[in-house]
Amino acid sequence: MNGEHRDFLALEEEARLDRFLTDRCPDLSRSQLQDLMRRDLVTLNGKPARPSHKVRPEDVITVVIPPPLPVDLIAEDIPLSVVYQDSDLLVVDKPAGLTVHPAPGHPTGTLVNALLALCPDLQGIGGETRPGIVHRLDKDTSGLIMVAKNQMAHISLSAQLKQREVEKGYLALVWGHPPESGVVDAPIARDPGYRKRMAVVAGGRDSLTRYKVLEDIGPFALVEAAPRTGRTHQIRVHMTHLGHPLVGDALYSRRPRLVPRHFLHAFRLSFRQPSSSKWMEFESPLPPDLAEALEEFRAEDAGNAAAGGGKSRAQ
Image 1 (cartoon, helix red, strand yellow):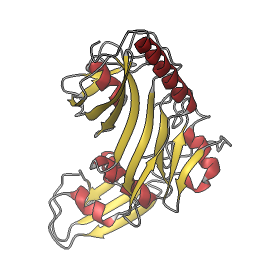
Image 2 (tube, one colour; image 1 turned 45 degrees about the horizontal axis):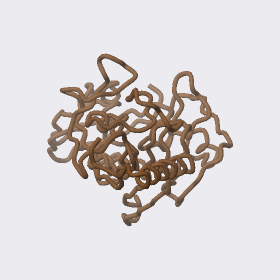
Image 3 (cartoon, helix red, strand yellow; image 1 turned 30 degrees about the horizontal axis):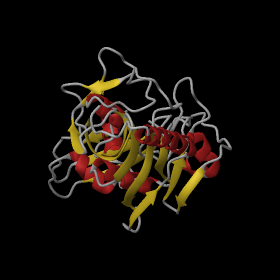
Image 4 (tube, one colour; image 1 turned 60 degrees about the horizontal axis):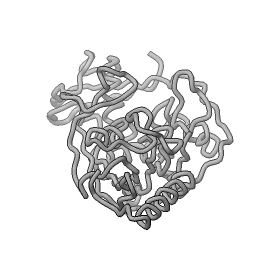
């Protein structure tokens, strides 16, 4: 098969092949190596190998890295708000309405297309269709997202996410008044009754979100949510599970939308710089559409209080 061939001779015993190769192929993540094994592109003494195979002295391991598949990603001059940039990464303040990466039927107009115009060398880093992407935000969620500019940075940032070392904070406006703080520890999977949605489902993937109420505003509460895992729609699903769906979330709530999109903004992002290990912290203010809606709700609440309505923690 065409592509790069890497041969290794084991000098001592090792419990698992995937760990052996992770140490010797720093430019490949463990998930990438496991994918090569699933495709029978890793052999142990000439036979297809699996991640859990034990490595013994004198074993010969061969890794075949196929050439990248041609893709039709197009660099597009889409304006981006770059909060930070160095040789390893970018931090972008993504606007609502911008999809993170191309998907079937939506090949252009994404964050990836914009990034390729800004940093052409991103092509192929971490994956052919999602170059540089280590995590994502929903199309209609605004806020901070980090992007790797080289393979080493992609592996480092991905590992930090997997080990739950990255700290993320979101501002959400929800219906009703949840307890002042709490933890939602509930598994998430595809909703068996509606495939476009996610839901809390027994046997789903472990999912944990911490939250605290920052402010009660009339029938709403402004909440700071800190997801410890990165499941699709996690905050939206967990707050709905509590009985307090996000304002404006047409997918998870039948209540009046009141705002043009779900009220969710990734306002805080902290992690270690891949090369220096320096702890980095970034914050982003609410964008104008959400900030203006919030002020309108506050003004309405103040007017109701002045008229004798008062404020209450009760729904």
